[in-house]
Amino acid sequence: MITRYFLTGAAVLTLSIPAAVLACPTARPALSPAARPPEPRLDDRSAALAAAPRIIYTAHRGGALEVPENSMAGLTTALARKDAQVLDFDVRSLRDGTLVVMHDATLDRTTSRTGPVNALTAAQWRTVRLRPAPALRGAWKPERPPTVAEALDRLGGRTTLMIEAKDPAGLPRLARMIRDRGLTRSVYVNSNHPDVARQAHRMGLPAQLWRSARQMRHDQPGDWRGFVDLLDVDYRARDADIRRAIASGVPHVWAHTVNTPRQRDRMVRLGCDGIITDTPSLMITTPVRLRAGGGPGGGLSGG
Image (cartoon, one colour):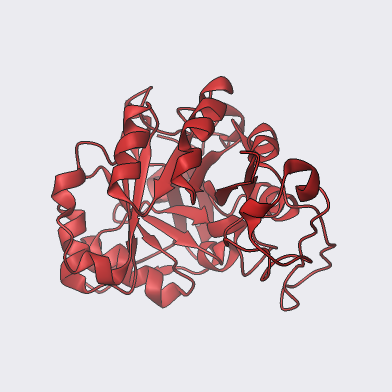
């Protein structure tokens, strides 16, 4: 198990990629060996709380309330900060089939341009500039949004990646890019569509499926356990729907998009083993508060 240790008050905070993530060499993403911290001293180990939750933090779009979303500067900053064990970004296709890092179907919200992303060629993409949100702390310069090839070459093998395939037609090309770089153990391919998750699984990639609170009211997540490695649930869902996801048999259940400690604490109490967040620095520095009584419903520990 790959573990990170942080001191939070008198307790040692333990965060780890769950053991099952590493159990299968062909189907589970793992942190690269270079990212592993030094082994803790024996006295540090003995000080760890037995009930401390093992939470995996994902920097959603790099941590979009702390860095410019889906930008190379934001993603590399999130990697350097080491607040999250997983980096998330979104993928869309250009007119010529080039895969690029962008969440929206249009350029309007986050760039200096307007219009649909899929109307551009790779040459035109190089003229686009991201506009960092004014509310972000720090000095962020406009920059060209990266292609997926650039993101994989810069980040691949250095951390676990979570990539949402916004355009399912681009999935075969994305799969080839991941395989060609030897990253099939360290990239989750994410989608809102079970059929896309099934397709990713058949391609030999770890499949992630995200679901909205509305969808979860009617979902039967146990039907997906044969091809979904990671179920990504909406923190706004009802407790009963979250518990049904936890009991589904899908190996991991993580919650999105969780931006306050209170939201996180509820999801951890319900049994989620990962948190997808726009505020990874806030999450990692705020202890998880659990109800009295021990276990998933009790105690006070770091998160």
